Length: 427
Image 1 (cartoon, helix red, strand yellow):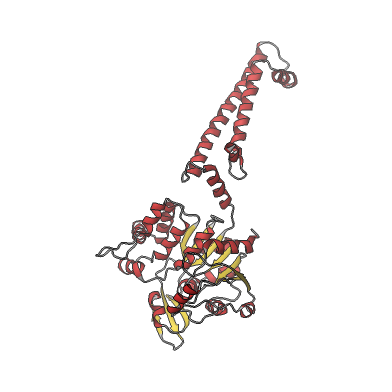
Image 2 (image 1 turned 90 degrees about the vertical axis):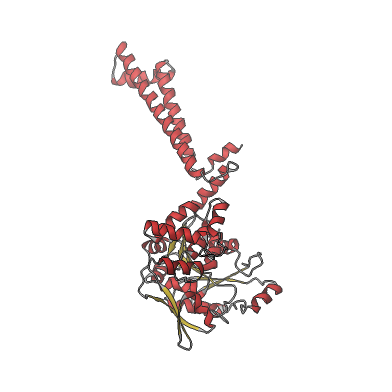
């Protein structure tokens, strides 16, 4: 019975079956004409007899010619069907295991029909969201901040002058459909002593590829092919930008990795240079999106930097997509200490434009007392949901049980994606 699964709608198999059937029909017609079957008599009486009332050898030659035409059409059709079906199978099942290939192919085709989603952010929040989204659609574009200047990314940025690859690497791996070993390789971090300590292989690979190709964005595209990702990952800008912060006491600090170290209330963040241009593909993806998701992630160092790139916030507002902001579950020490959901919302609006999103997705599930106590010891507390204040901004609040069961207080990627899809599509 498994053979019938190849007739599932959307797989693209039935067209080759129909072509093969038509080809055999043509072959049968040709054979019938030559062997004087009733079909041949019908053709002779109603077609040949009407057009050319001929007898003898000439009629036979005409019948032979028509039969040959049908034979040729059948051979061409069968050959085309076999070759095309073979190429289609190899192209669509190259990454599948032999067991359950039809089910995997059906799922792939269904994902290709999913809505176009653009997700903006950086850090672990964005990559965690992408792990959930890829189970609902393969039409995903991740737009990633390139203001990171710490760790391996910061070293490569300073030494090679390349854009920081760390957040982009995490998003590529999150969307990857490659062999587990390849994904593990991209995330491998060198721990031995020497110049490589602290670097991840994926960061080095992307940086090297950018040097070879002479273009960071092209390097990301080629890395995407290697990891066979669902969708695409784009830098918010191709320009070398730095993130700075102005605090409530009017002091200024430059550098994404050190902004939270001051442990002072952030009044505003900015990019240097301020007039940085977005990538064309990022703007195109936003304009064509069905759903746009901002967050989750560090408010001032992962989310807002994307919105400071010229034209991105305006493009999001003008887009006809449904727009969501996913608020963090916990406050972040030194960055959003004491922030409510509305404080997060207002910070984004104050750095961009009013009317940037339609919904705010918040968690309503309580974590275990032990985990909460552990986070509170580090200065992180559950974000308070002040629904009435959020609604005053013209934004609807979606509350759901969204916590992961992995021993951390963070979003469960599948539940978060399912909540967004249910709201946007009714699925």
